[in-house]
Image 1 (cartoon, helix red, strand yellow):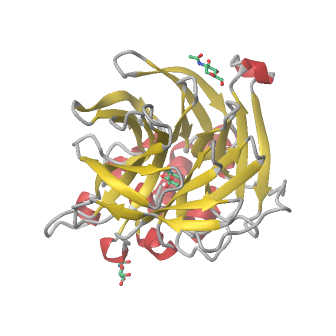
Image 2 (spheres, rainbow, N blue to C red):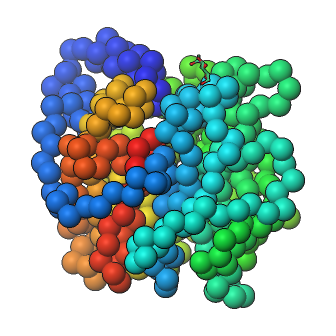
Length: 383
Ligand SMILES: *[C@@H]1O[C@H](CO)[C@@H](O)[C@H](O)[C@H]1NC(C)=O
Ligand SMILES: *[C@@H]1O[C@H](CO)[C@@H](O)[C@H](O)[C@H]1NC(C)=O
Ligand SMILES: CC(=O)N[C@H]1CO[C@H](CO)[C@@H](O)[C@@H]1O
């Protein structure tokens, strides 16, 4: 959601539903954070890693405890974030990178890219890191790359020329070796990605149904144009599911169940994969706030970065990352053995972290290391 579009949205909402403030407008604004009081929780024992700013996505390699981060620069994020309509390629970094962080030694390694012939650079967003099925010390790294359009085309007119890049690395290795670039007309507005263990296929979310234009924003009024696309390097891409609302982060549990965050209405889609690589919606778990990127921990809990107040995030923090934006983390238990059933009543949604932005600002990704009991938070603009 970009700033003008949210303003339009609120204006339209009030115009159309003005008579039903209490029942229609207010609940929607409340999900976005209107009138919400921040209740700090578990924010006292945090350590910052200032050397890793603007790392939007974190993936935990559970066996080693290493974190993989897809990083940019805070300045680039303010100019170049296609997901929220920031399309100024002049101000974009095309020199983004994947870094590893070892919480034990605090060592940070910026991985060197090898065999990447493209001159169009890397401008990163969603990522997945998956141990290879043939050798678990090899890792496949799937990256959303928002390239600038070619020639005289301007991104503000045609949008980003986004693709998916696949690289290979080894656990704790220093390099990323390029394997493939996947380009396809239905790679429209790729956001987050889940890759396979053979390095050949993946699912990603399109966070909008169009790259640019007003039509992009109609989801705010109930149009459902976001989707998930399945791609195979040899067979190409096809829709796995269409006509969803607010698709953002995507994650897959060890048993194959998929989760997608609905960033508009604050909830979690639960989907199962079919044999033909289509996804089927099986459940929807509600939350009281907009959700962002997701991860599943080794015990099967789903973690979501959640926006206590989307207004501060969009109107203030994205333009000026030094303005703090409140953050929170929610944990869903979709597993009956965790004391919840997927029957809506008993489902557990817990708020396990919240901060007014002074410790953790503008958090868009949370990851939990269940073995080592460490919670990691990162944000697109800040650290
Ligand atoms: C785009 O980015 C460039 C480089 O940072 C900057 O000089 C320019 O003012 C930006 N344009 C807009 C419309 O923000
Ligand atoms: C996978 O695990 C989740 C809970 O962790 C459960 O809700 C889901 O039904 C399981 N899926 C399958 C296909 O067993
Ligand atoms: C993969 C990823 O980082 N997805 C989303 C995380 O949160 C930001 C902030 O809302 C989104 O813009 C990203 O698309």
